[in-house]
Image 1 (cartoon, rainbow, N blue to C red):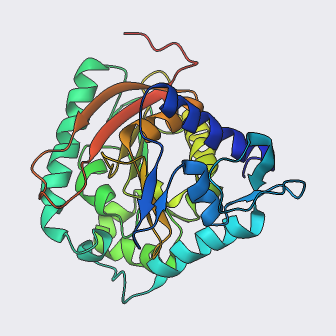
Image 2 (image 1 turned 180 degrees about the vertical axis):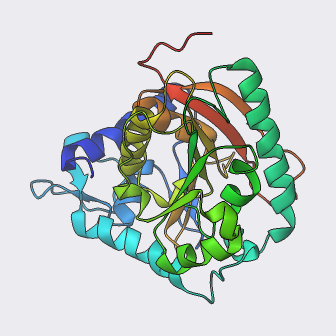
Length: 309
């Protein structure tokens, strides 16, 4: 599922305008050192957006009107194909914790402990959020699960009755049952699908955990995913939790090798707002090495539903 051509441009333009109006950065760079004046310019450079056939401007120009750009379907396919190839390569991404964390296996326990405390503190101010229930089977989903590091180390130990693992790489997902363990794996479902195509059922999940993966989605696909996830939250306590790298001096940093975008926190929050989500709890990860990007933990619910205190 994706937005039509006009809607892709509308989302990028809306986020860009919101950032500008709030005096936030809209420029960025890529891993080769190339600079981009705007978010639109970056997506044009990747072929995800393209100029309309009636426009006489080139894709390299930064100032392009909203009605002059739209989705390039072939460019979108190539964007996801590039990241899929990266994660399917055993050399670049072994099916280990170290592979899942890009060589930073040493931070896994620190990360999981902070995530656990985040959820426990969230539950203390949001009593409707339930990890265990005698009335129904509580359910979580780990998005971009890889081999299931978060499922094994965080979600199942909290007592959730079922965990779904969503992962686009069949190679990584096939290793998840053995990594998680035979008994815990019986509580899991393994879904081999990209997040841009993941369509969860309504009123299903108590926790939707999205960590270190949102950068692989285009802006429009982020918004689409957030909207679908919002509808799939079990009410009244369900939450979407995003935990990801952010940049601070630019709006984005594009990694051209694995087709991913590290966004600024204002950029990311603007995408959640476009999807009709509201922040209910937020905290920064502490105790990571200094050479790792700042990592916020953000809990969100639908802004269109009444959530009792």
